[in-house]
Length: 116
Image (cartoon, rainbow, N blue to C red):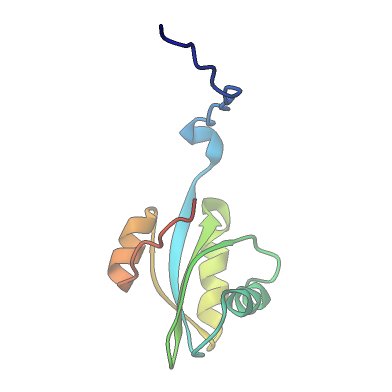
């Protein structure tokens, strides 16, 4: 005779908002002219330069002489963000694109492994 095995509570999944509702954004690849920065210190430095513009830091790879980062900005704030980034000597804007995979490839950054 077989027993009926009851599973735990079912998960409720929320539907994702459609692509148009999420808004458009641009990915910007930067090189910070300071080596060995942590993710928090790189984010703080970018925040000082960007002033009140919103951004999200996605990738950060520290090396001996420089630190490579990828940030996401909204399409509406993209031109003013590029202008502020170009005005400073501490940050160098290398590449920008609408797709993060292209920015990672051109900067030579691997896709980080997600922790589950």
